[in-house]
Each structure stands twice: as structure tokens, then as C-alpha cells.
Length: 536
Image (tube, rainbow, N blue to C red; front, side, top):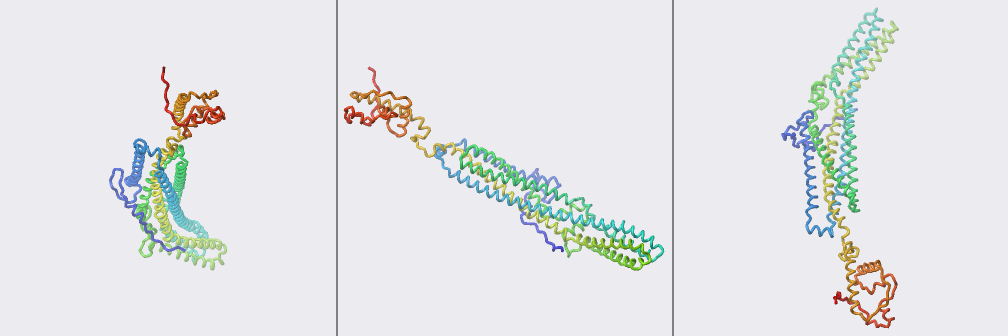
């Protein structure tokens, strides 16, 4: 049972896209009627793609200017910030880029799925419509073939059998007239092959393109997600090679985002131009192949408006049915009255009866297939799939492209600052006199050697009466070790303490007591001024 007709109403976003400026490459405004074969109309869609390309150029230029200023125009305040960097800006930029990327990927998956659903509904409706048209053609061809060949052959044989009975021969002639009348009515039905359009081939082509479109966007979505996660990992681990790789991939994804935005925008505007007035476009495309009354009947399927084809089809099918009914009555009469007289005619009469029964079945099927509600439902379903799910999904893909571009712009702005912080991370929270500071470590040994020499000379000049025992000379490695340790613990190195390093000797106070010298005569740790000896 056929369902009631559902009227098609174009969604609001198709009107919004339809009102976009249509400008050709010579910057001339053109009509926004859907004309895919027109060169100016094709240029107007290419102009939208060129706008996205121009936006890509401006985006890359802005990034180049930003990176140049960041690298070449550092102030003293920025240099001081480099020594002790504030990572708050980089952290929030990374968080914003990650959130934008996640939202973009979610929107992209939804848009990709919606577009795929719309195209699937389109192809499904095209296959159904093609099945209907092919069914009509097969029924008409089969019925006409049966009437022209099978019925004619049986009637010719019966005419020879009933040659002696004039009344039976007249009945056969009347049946031949009914057969010719049926053929005439079938020839009046529309020949869909004249349209030169194979809907099945169109559906196959659309499904092929959609498969690779869906797969391409799926790979782009996965790539965006992987690059975003890798960039966040590089910022967290402060990995230079990972950040460098992600910057290159970020620029690539930025280019892909703007390119996909241009393609999606041009596609959405073109489909919207069709969706605003699809009936007009289809009637213009089929006016040279099929009568406009037939196209109007199936596109609008109005039971209240008068349509010449509807009346003609109804009249033809009615004549077809009446002719079959008349022939059935004639065959029943011949089987009842002629078979007893001519038993050899029974086989041909039964074959004609079977042919008429199959023709009646074909008539019922043809009546159902020629009804406008079946093809109109497929037509409306196709429009709903393209103009609702399809265009809506493409719009979501445009939003995905914009969000992706914003996310990776933010990431490309944050990565150079993170790079500078990675360079300065060895000096973060390190004091100038910290022994683990590489710069302080390079300066400490020379200072330690100078103070040790001065202290040693001062000690010799102030304690002439002391004669310390002979001590084996310390190696250079021991002295150097002592100097470094003295610098580490902040003490003033003294030459008299050198033998204590690495030999386990008692402290100076104990050594003085053993020798009989009062500890008060031992030099205190009061720093002395280094006096260089004068030449005599």
C-alpha cells in the first residue's frame, strides 16, 4: 500500500547559502540559479574556493609575521622573562588548542556521518526509482511481446481449426482487434529510455565519490587528533624534536583545513542552489526527452490539479482492462462451445487464457507502478537526503575546518614560546652562586686558587715561629678536589687544610696541642689581606 505524499520544503540553511554572492572570476555578479553546465556559474563556485585560498594566505602571512616578531624583536623584558619564564601563557594556549581540536574532531565526525547518511538516502532513492522505471518498461515490453507474437500465433492456428465455423472465426477476429487495441494503449505510455538517463549509473557514481570523500575526511580527522595529542605530549615532555615535527604537521593540517573549507563551501552553495528549486531544474533537463505533463505529474503528484497525462494514463489502463475482460469472456465461450466440436483447439485456447491471465497481472502491477505516489516518494526522499542531511553535514564540516584552523593556529603560536622555555629550563629557579649552575661552576676554580694562594702567603708571614712538620705534598687532583668542595660549601680555602683532604690527618688544633703549642697561637679563620712579597 502506497503511503500518503509528503511535500518537500527546502530548509532554511539552503536559502541562506543560496543568497551568498555569486561572482565569477571577472568579479561580475551572476544569477544564482542552479546551472551546472554554465561556465559563469562554475566560476562563481570556484570564486568561493578562491576566497578560502586567500584566507589561507592571510593566515600563513599572519603566522609568519608573528614568528618573525617573536624571534627577532625580543626586548630586555622578554630576555629577563626567558631566564625565569612564565609558562602560564603557553599552558593556557595549549589547553585552548587542545579543547578546540577535540571540539573540531567531534563536529567533524558528526558532519561526516550526516553527509554520508544524506548521500546514502539519495542513492537508495535513485535505485528505487530506477527499479520502478525498469519495472514499467519490462511490463510494457513483456505485455506487448505476448500480444504481438504469442497471441497472434495461437489465433492463426485457431483460425485454421475453426475455418468451417464462421461465428468462431468472427470471435477470433474480434479478439485480434482487442489485442491491437491493448498494444495501442501500451504504446501511448511514456518511454523512459528516451530520457537517456540511467539512474542506477548515477547512483553508482555518487556512491563511489561518497565512499572516497568519507574515507578522506575520516583520515583527516584521525590525523588532526593524533597531531593534537602529539603536540600536547611534546609540550608536556618538552621534547624539541616532537615539537618541531608537530609544527610541520600543524602547517600541513592548516593548509588542508582551509582547502577543505573552500571545497565544502562551494559544494554547499551549489547543492543549496539546486535544493531551493529542484523541480524547475529537472523539468528543464527533461523537456526535450519527456513531455512536461508527465514530469509535472510525477514531481508534484497532486490529486486535485488536472494533469493531461494522468487522465491519459487512467484512460489507457481502463481500456486495457476492459479489452482483457472482453477477451476473457470470448475465450470462456469458445472453451464451452467450440472445444466439444473441435477438441484440437483446446490447447491453443488454454494457452490464450493463460496469456490473458498473465497480462491482467501485469496490468495491476503496471497500474501500481505508474501511480505518481511511488516515484514521487523516491523523489522527495532523495531531496530530503541531499538538502537536509547532506547540506547540514557539509555545513558541519565547514565548522570543523574553521575550528581546526583556529586550534592549529593557536598551537603554532604556543610552540615557539614553549621552545624558548625549553632552551632556558636549565636556568629556571637557579641562583647565581648555585654550585650546580654551569656558569658558576666554570668561574669557581679560578677564584678558589687565588684565595688559597693569598691565604697561604699570609699564613707564612704571620706565623714564622711555627714550623709544621713535613707533610707529603698533595697531588694536583687532591688540591683541585678541595678547591671545588670549598666553593661548594662557601668556605674560604686555607692551604693548611689541604693535607686533610684524602689522608685522614688530625685537625690543626690537635696537632698544635701535641707539639706543645697553645691553641691560642694557631691562626684563626679570620680572613687576611693578601700581601704580595716585595723584591729586596
